[in-house]
Image (cartoon, rainbow, N blue to C red; front, side):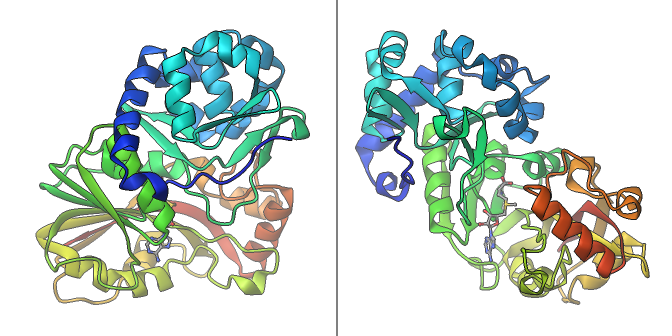
Length: 374
Ligand SMILES: C[S@@+](CC[C@H](N)C(=O)[O-])C[C@H]1O[C@@H](n2cnc3c(N)ncnc32)[C@H](O)[C@@H]1O
């Protein structure tokens, strides 16, 4: 039997012993060669960003190289924490130094059972950071060593395509940054802002982010909160960044009438975002937008969705280029979502999305960065 329980970051947030173990863990992992460049090379990706964007694909392509991977220490760590696979206990004992094993097991990040070792979390290098998160897929014996999606409706995602896309568009702005919908805390922790905080509706995400702050020795505080309610003291943030959740249709399309329409999100969040920003502040939001046939001007469309609020001094909509986070007009007219599209998980989801796009006469789906200045 393999252990597939959900790790509970909440248990470690207020435990000084866990904090010390996390700091030591980061040092040990780095000195073991678990760095972005090395991890990408081991899985055949052209760069650490390429790997983060397509991690399930590289996990699939490397499945017949498991044997080679686990023969070196960085490769074994990649098998456990990037492919979220299994390692034979005797190899783990022979390859991973006792101190690193002790820390992994004391934090519950690795579990040994029936002669196999499995990971409970993903560990992703992101620039100079190492980030803990839920695994989105696992490569276990039951799926022939190939990636199988974890059936978790609310995973705390590792940094992924949309994280990278928004990160590319962020402009440093003032001392105080808030990472809204922080997930693993990736965007807040990678920023150079002097004061970093973050909010996520999932308590688990706030807990992961706080542990990632400790792991990376970055002073930052993340908490649970909802953009539909006030996000903190008025005018207390200079720069708000938000990689906003996009919505593809569920299996039953009527469950999800919004389909990449940011109208409701902006109606619910804009007032709370603007109140939080200091005078001279900037909010940058990554939105995935379905552009209807009847109105192809995406900038005007998004701008019109922002509620009229007194303190807004400027609105800008910038095209954010990433084909894997959009669906071109050509793809819609052919009725085929290209492989590699990150907006769908599987062929069933792709078919449902295509039906919904055509029924609603959507011309294209594209990511944009909405900047709101106060
Ligand atoms: C696309 S993910 C971005 C995660 C992370 N910032 C990143 O870029 O990797 C969107 C995040 O928004 C959070 N979220 C969804 N609804 C929210 C709400 N009402 N208030 C605050 N956060 C929310 C989700 O839990 C999720 O972590």
